[in-house]
Amino acid sequence: MKTIITGYIFLFTLFSFSQTQEVLPIDQSFKQFISCRDFTLSTNGKEAYFTIQNLNESKAAIVKAENINNTWRNFEIVSFSGKHRDIEPFLSPNNLRLYFSSNRPKNKNGKEDDYDIWYVERKTINSKWSQPINLGTPVNTKHNEFYPSLSKKHNIYYTSDQNNKTSKDDILFAEWNGSNYEQPKVLNENINGKGYEFNAFIDPDENFLLYTIYKAKDGIGSGDLYISIKDEKGYFQKRKNLGNLINSERMDYCPFYDEKTNTLYFTSKRDNTKLKKTDSLSEFNTITNGYMNGQSRIYKVKIDLNNQ
Image (cartoon, rainbow, N blue to C red; front, side):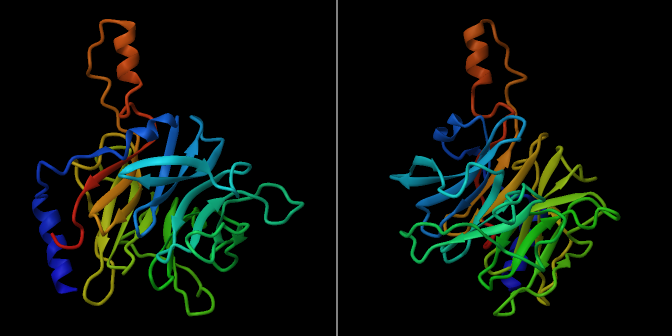
């Protein structure tokens, strides 16, 4: 643990990213979607899930994609999604459960409700997904629960607006005791403040937490990605901004880290069109229809968060 912590301090003290560490589109095939977000990846790297939505975000569904010869293909809405607003999928470390947030009814005859955390499960990675199952209390409440992320210990980290009298969105944690979840806890002031903290990704070994803060005092854009690292005693330390080589002046959110390839995937509304002069309608359309055009899209960047 000492080696890992030392590495992180080096990373954020010097910001020593090499020139090869450039934020790139995840894949040009994702440009077919007007708006997408919330990427999660299987441990073998061959299966991904993410959210597609319309521009005003009133309609959303979860999509599966397959990686074949390093190209994402075979996009399809998963069997259980498409009717209600299903968002923010997360594959469990064993790939046999897919967690997500949804406003779907809690009973067959009910109406769409607040957002709860749900999951589907399968016996093997080649099996079909089950029908959605509500995670239940004490994680789900009468308030909204978003963006689930689970560690190898089955502990869950997620976003909630239940403390809106003292803050906005916060990151919460619930420990798995082997049979059910203990009462959730709000992470301390090293993570949460009085504003919006959301979209937390927990490292499978729970060594670090990646998440977004909206309009932070030391922020670069409307929403920035931050990291908090655990110390030797197991406490999350003061959050650090990932810097302007990753964060933009627009919203950067929904992180997912693949430690096998040292790749950070995240959603961004970054825009590189405004400074480009256009002399014709066709040129204007080419520029504004590019990947980095201000719409919500998924990006990737190589960064080693374990052995800096």
